[in-house]
Image (tube, rainbow, N blue to C red):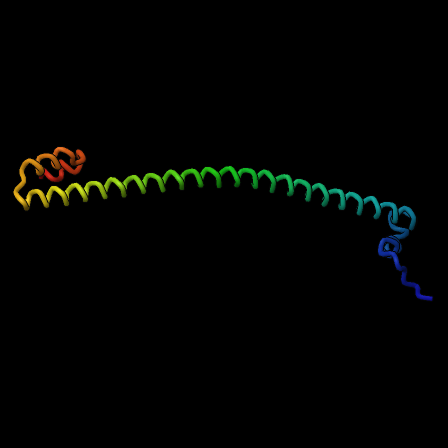
Length: 124
């Protein structure tokens, strides 16, 4: 039969037997306590990590939702700006047609409807 023990704790305890005046059984108990403490610390660290991950996940979701709202607002603003540009272009094109045809009454009508910014640029 082999002298090699099948239990790793017993093997470690046999190497320590007699040191500090402790028996094999006492060393086995110490090794079991140390292993239990290490496993408890690992479980605690795992739980803490999961807790921190859930906090981050909640914060990430909140920020993602805020970003989505800002994206929608930006899209609305771009759409409105493009619509206003389109109106200004159509109004200017109509004014140009009226001016080219010599219809001063229609020219005046379109000029009064220019956006203030566009009217200033047009006046220059």
